[in-house]
Image 1: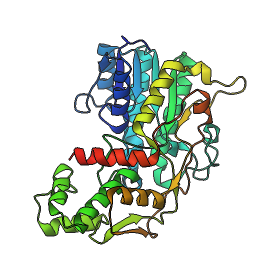
Image 2: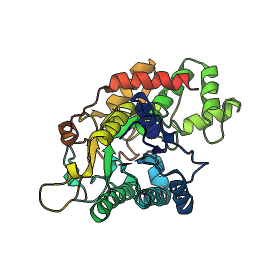
Image 3: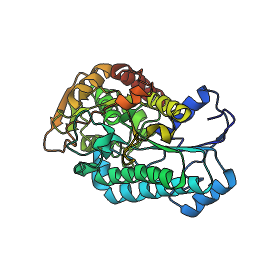
Image 4: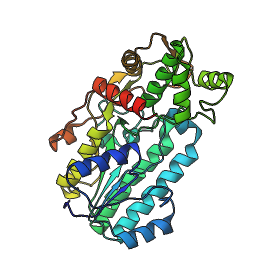
Length: 357
């Protein structure tokens, strides 16, 4: 990429897109074309086509997506497959039609089979069934990978797909219904800690900043207690889904952004094609190659917040995939590795959360 290039970061306000935009700016890029969801609905093909016709970006980071945790994935299966397919199809096809020089498509390691080998190499894609709870989202992201590969092969485009592991960081989603596990745990344990200390003002401040199902800090004490209880938040402790035994890998979002920009600056599709045989699985895993259990994660967050109550696990609730560790050999061979370890990341994110209430 050239410093004067026009760059479109789709989804620039989200966890992923905001981190990529920040990284690009830190490296001297300053010619951006940005749109909020209200300004440009990426599921609207005509609107996307008009945008590309008028703006003609040189490079595209496709970080926009409809995302959520295990609860949201289970409840809104239709939304997850439809919205993500529409966003991807529209942006990738418009990029081709308007001669975008290079596109980076961001997916997720949930694309891999539920019983994938551990750690998961790129070439285990489509070798066995997906984990059921996030199947619609995974299918959409697999489609995005194959669309990029197919356009590259048919049209000579230069589209690269990257599959980040579980991300966390500034601008994360702390909505108790739709958030991923790490930010949800931070918020739940923070609220339980506030209840445990009798700090009602902290609870009200939290709910005013991020209402839960219409309940705010201005609601009655009974309403606040009922909604927090619904999500497993009590004065005595926090109830979390599953057994706590599943293992997960977590990557600081700003590390992920650095990897994405590094790849856009240094790696082309031709660099990822095999020397012989069919061209497939050219995507790149982005992760740490390290893992810890959900139970261990909860205890790290408990210690960071200094919560004195219980952490309880509800084994009647789904665990999701038991293990999801990425094989980051390809990424390391390209010359990039992470820098923020999980304990430091939790400390950073909790401080960010408190500062953004």
